Image (cartoon, rainbow, N blue to C red; front, side):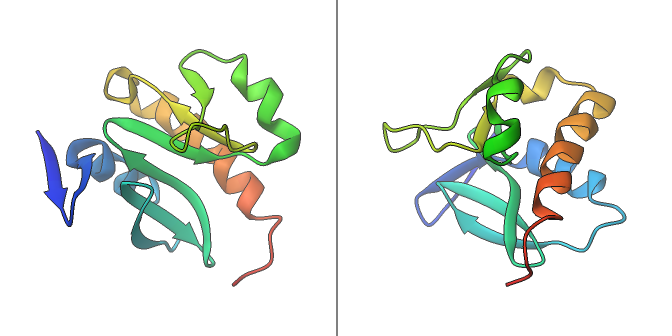
Amino acid sequence: MPVYDNHMAFDERVAERLRGLFDTVPVMEKRMFGGVAFMVRGNMCAGVTGSNLMLRVGPQAYEECLRLPHAKPMDFTGKPMKGYLYIEETEKLSDAQLRTWLELGLRFVATLPAK
């Protein structure tokens, strides 16, 4: 069941799974994009909106990642945000699959300066 907070809805079960996968990486949570975002060194890495994983893979990996199963452009404003993806049907992914996606996001944000 989605959690509603300040008019933002996201699937708490998916968020909890992500929290468990950030086991060795310090993260801060921030409400944004109609859900919750996981910030690494002040940069958005991943998040949950509805039951979708939001993932920041960066502009160089973006096109290649779009060819992978479950990946769609992140377009909550009606215009795709290059470098950001929605991973659909997240609740059906295994922890190993979810970790693989998360590692793509972590790899990109590791290239960014801390904020």
